[in-house]
Length: 487
Image 1 (cartoon, rainbow, N blue to C red):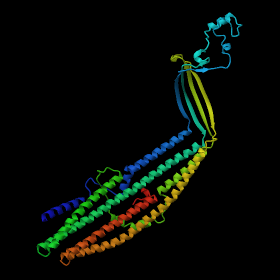
Image 2: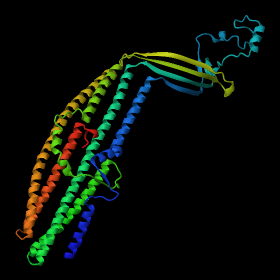
Image 3: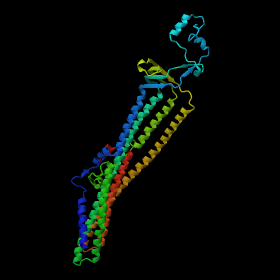
Image 4: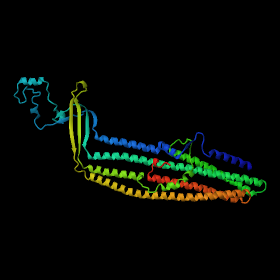
């Protein structure tokens, strides 16, 4: 049993010594500012938000393109399956009398034969007026080709101009959303960083408990061998060492998990070997100044409120867009094309006919069944809803700010009390250890003193951690960016 205990103790001591700083030669030690800078460039949510800004900027450019002329090339081919038939409400025979007159007379029947022969020589034939056309005249040719260019642009369109303002506001909202993502990321990195510090503090406490238990066991073993300690004390001392070992391993594992969480939040490779710089006690020295630095707070920097204000302004412009739908619009159009109509596919022999025009188009809205009025009312209701949401959000944020300030104040008071308790507990443990070594106190007294010391040490670390988490949440609520929250 002694050999097993010695082997296990040696393994724990070696592991604790190796993991004391959780560092190797390749370990990258990060301060809080280092972690935040890396996260700003590697965090996925920040990258997505930046992409959204770029997307909104392109959408804005696309909306402004509506102010410029829209030029399109056109081309078409049409094959006639059945020609159109034209009918006229007068005697077609009198009009076509000069065609194919077997008597050689003119249209009025008074012409000479030479005139008739002249007409026949010219090759003129009467249009198709057979039964298939029902007595009408078939018009057009079998093939129609057309190629050209068309352009148009608005000259006056109040609704379009107002919608351009909304596109510009979409970019501003995207920028603010990116800022919100950055603020959220800063808060998450801070919480993960403080979590690593808390886990390392707990590891150091449990390692100290284990070392104290091992020292006490050695003292008890020496006294037991000279029959100055009972077997009960010896067994209790050995049990204390065995009980302390799992706590050391669990604390070490907590540190590793906290480091993984920090790496995941930063957006770096999980296989990267990192460690954090500093201790929670470093932040305990500035707690008093931190709590008073947030006096006279304002919610002007809160990202949620700023987004709501931008959305309200955007909805106000949307109402104008719907109202401007009742205004006339004026546009300019131009078209140029070349057309050819043939019955064959001899392209070299085609006769191309140009066709072009310039047009001004005026559109005056008169009646749309109440559609435009309903759209205005709908946009107005959305604006009213957003105003109510804005008021409720402000109310909830003020409550959250008061809550975080209260948590910080409670944490400061708890820290002062925990510090005083820690000093007393450490002094009590030192007295109990010395008394036990000279045989004036029992192992039970020493164990009670050790438990009180451990609890007070963990309590100090926990109060600092709670204060820092509340401070990080407060700064997030107030809208502090990375540049405003550097330690």
